[in-house]
Length: 92
Length: 155
Length: 228
Image 1: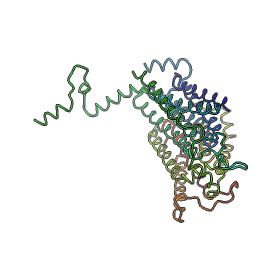
Image 2 (image 1 turned 90 degrees about the vertical axis):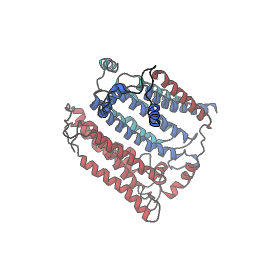
Image 3 (image 1 turned 135 degrees about the vertical axis):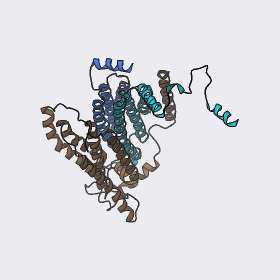
Image 4 (image 1 turned 90 degrees about the horizontal axis):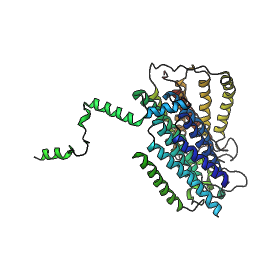
């Protein structure tokens, strides 16, 4: 129990840091989804199966879908190294 | 006992870490989309904190099955609150994203400094003010503040 | 300047929160209200899943406020994104795998969504989770056939009827001499599908409303400017 909890917390915090520091927006959305997934397993370990189901369905599923659709509408979907440099130049 | 203690601290570290990382993202990011993502992270941390608050050691899930008594279950009230909070969170996120889409259409940028400058220019243009009438002059100059108006009114 | 202050602020807040948390005795929080609800919920509401009893019975007005917030968010998002005469984004047609698996998955997701909603008072799950699955099921055809017309009117009618039904059930309980949103129709025998009185009906209505709102939201996001 304690090892899997620790592992999940580490994965969750690393993914949360990745959300902030990744240059690529699609990668950031994927990292946010990883945060939600780890969080839903944590909820299950904390004996909250209802919350775990909601987090898995809403946070990891629907929220990522909404973010991905918004990325397309915002025109930020280019993946790969080229888009990262573009983004950096645009932000400069 | 120390093992048990460690488990709680790992969980608290996770929840507080998520809140802190989300707040850093909200303040630090200059990109609107990244700010919205950070908001979701901070909210996830707050939800985890609430569920931890209702957790009891060696508790059971609050569902009636044979052989489990109500005294052994974890607190159902924070779980119900988090249940609604998660769904509200996704609604707020979608609202923020749709506003961001409109901002992008209006100003062709998602950098908050550029958007702020463009908005300020728009507001100034609508109010008929030119940019150099700002009260915040560079250092060394007297600020045209309300004191001048007050003295004129008194005399 | 901002680069330095924000991590400092967050570190200070995290330290403050850790200090506050250290005051608690780990894992043995007092739960006065929670214990009382755990003791009496199976007898008074007849649900096996006590979280459902809290969501719909003890804190039903909270849930009403929650769907009001979700409705407002979905309404404003639709208002902001909708532009008359907008041109649809040109989309590449979907591949074979997506189209065929959509036909396969759509009925399955409907069944699973309604199963989760209708068993919300017995097992983990309920209106929120099932509603999200329903919204995802109705979003699949939009992915598979990009040119498809979204019937926003139908979604709005479903949403409005479901929301009114939630309030009407609450009002019926009020006029029968109880409190607003008090569970009706007795408790039944806990553990059976047809038990817990009006709570499964409330959860079904809630699931339909959440599903319709989120599906409308997704449909607004997927098209450049959707006609009403």
